[in-house]
Length: 226
Image 1: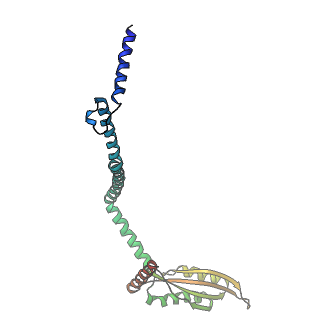
Image 2: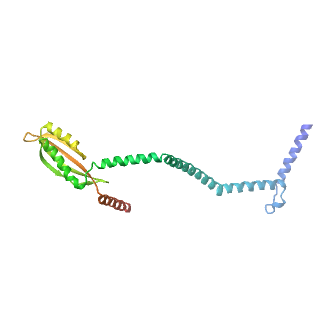
Image 3: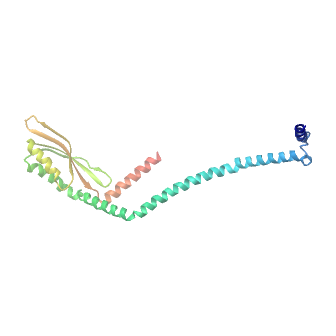
């Protein structure tokens, strides 16, 4: 008996709720029963929230994510600069040492006026070992950033021992000279021939360096217009 009493009111409430949603006049929602009005307000709230998320909050969320990424990147940059600032004195010492080493290396490169003396030293190194120069042909200079390469094609004849000493003497010169494309063979006269491309180096003066930079800038500008 009690069970039937419990079920009946629920059925009545459901029927009444369903009845409230029947025959609603969309032109006069003010006269709707309470349940439909609450349902309509909830629906409007959901639509408004969905529209706000789609047209505004979503973009703000994307912007917020982007700002978080930028914040992380800025933190990394700040930490990197902080480490550099802490080690600034050490970096200055390293830079000074690099400048000193670079200056020492640069002194091993002759200037334009000293090139003739250097070539004479290479020639004297061969003659001092009893070698005979059959070819001495300077090539065109090849300009680099702050130095120029001066190739000289040489051919000497003599015995093997003297040629080995000549190569050693060239390596001991106070100026940098490299021997490339070395080749030994016996000539038609039966003498041992030594062919090589001796490359010497000289540093460019300020005017030449400025000219090189100007040519590179013009070349880069011309390439950018293509």
